[in-house]
Length: 428
Image (tube, rainbow, N blue to C red; front, top):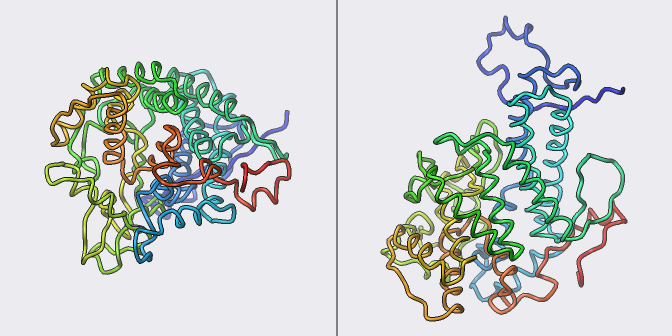
């Protein structure tokens, strides 16, 4: 049988090793699958975490805020050109499209490698857990792809062949299959270990996936299971977004500067700011106005510096060391609230009260949905939700004035040139 050799990323391998010991270190730059040690596999997994947080790039992380009406280019004279700004972003030749596509598939390549390797490992509990983590990551990658582009090529094995797009339905089904495996096989959550994938993180992501497809009863059940698990509770914004120990995060990328080039924060601050930045995007005035003085999220979400509006959730500026949150408990409250309709008002009000607001009593399902969507916009600002929230709820055209084609991202022009089997989304 032909041996396969895969690259394994090790951060800081010799950081604390003396020169005399360096020659005694076994090479980990390329490892044959039939000689993998337990340390090799753990190193491979560490590399996967790094690849997952870095490959898509900073703007992909906040992509749905960019196209969802929360942000506008900082050089715009007014917010009046928001629709034109979004249309200019949603072009096949825009670098944000190719960065997302290439980044997610680059990470997928490594995740598939790990799954290929793990299939040949001894059937130990730890190897089962590693496989579960890889299935979580594969689901998360495809969630990001399908919510942007619709149906995409589903690759369970790496291939050099040109591949057609799967349907959107097939892509969602694949995500659910991967998360089902992750819910069974990924490690059990340990208190405070939210920088590691866990089985309950897979359940939380599955709740999001179910809601995205309109499977509301299943979404509510899963979200409630996470909420009532006893493992998490709503916590203060200054803890969540200032990298302090908290009980709300379910899974995040730690995003340490020693292993990461992801600098989301620099997109939001001016160079004159104490943390410095390139100030690429600013929040629109509507975003500034939706927060009130009594809202405990206000100072952690937005700020004004020298008369300029800034997103304040990622405060490290050029150092870029802010965690990148993938899923947290507040989202589960919002999923449960939305999926249950007015019957979920209690969950919505619990979140509001925790954030310093008063309870509300909407008079109709429509008014209730408006309240849920506003709460999602405030709670999840700058975390990459808004555009798809509007698309999946049928609000994107009325609230943002998007054209029909802009309910999906265009496939990047360079990918279409490489793979002639791919078909562009309609009207691009």
